[in-house]
Amino acid sequence: MITDSFDNRTPAKINLTANPDAVRVDAVIFTFSHVIEEYVVSNFACEKVGALYMAHGSTNVYCFEYNGRKYGFYRTWVGAPACAATVEEICTVLKTDRIIHFGGAGCLNKEIARGKVMIPTAAYRDEGTSYHYAPASDYITVKNADVVAACMAANKIPYAMGKTWTTDAFYRETVGNFEKRKADGCISVEMEGSAVQAVCDFRHLDVYMFFTSGDLLDAPEWTQRRKEGQVKGTQHDTGHFDIALALAEFVSAGK
Image (cartoon, rainbow, N blue to C red; front, side):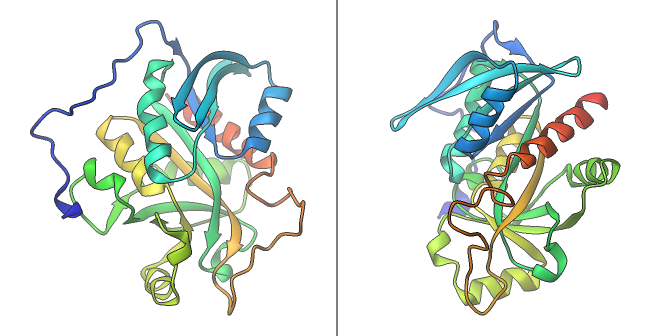
C-alpha cells in the first residue's frame, strides 16, 4: 500500500549531489505562473545561473539582488511529483535552506478567506509523493505557518490561517470530499503543499508557504471567479510575487 511507502532504512537508488560551486542565496522563491516569471525577469536584474530539466522541457533558475540580499527564483511545474522534484534538484544550482512556496489555490471557506492570503497550518495528504518522505498520516504540519503570519501582520496584509487539502486529482474534488475537508478546517485546496512540506522536512529545509484564492468551491456551483483575460486577483497577479519577496526578506532578516 502507498501508506507503507516511507523507507528511511535503505538508500535511494537515485541520489543528487549538491553542487559545491552553487551560488549561495538567502532564500529561493518559486512560482507556478509563466506571467510572474516574465514579470520578475523583466523587472529585476536577474542572472541565469542554471536550469532544471524534465522530459517536457526546462525551466531556468535565476539569481537577483534586492535590498542587499541575494535570492534565487524559478518557475516550477504543477503537481506534487514535479514540483517536489524541483525542490530536490535546486541544490544542483543554488545553496539555500529557505524555500518560499506560493501560488493560487481553491477556496473552501469563503467566509474565512475572502480577500485574504491563505496560510496553511497543516496539509491533508491526498497525493502520493509525501508518503515517500514522511510516515503515513492524514495531515502533515506546515511548520512555519506562524512565521508567515507574522510577516503578513508586519506588512499589514490581510490573512487567514487554516488547513489545506493537497490533492492529485482536481477533477475528483467531489462534493463529499469537499464537505469532509471543510469540516476538518481546510480553507484551501491545491496540488503541491503537503508534498513540498514533506520533502523540506526530510531534507532539513525551511519552507514558508502561502496561497492566494483562485476558484471557489464553497458555492452551489464551482466558479473560477475571474473574467476572460483577467490577471489581477488570479494566480498570475504579479502583486503576489511582491508578497513572496516581502516574505523572503522577512525570513532572511531573522537568520
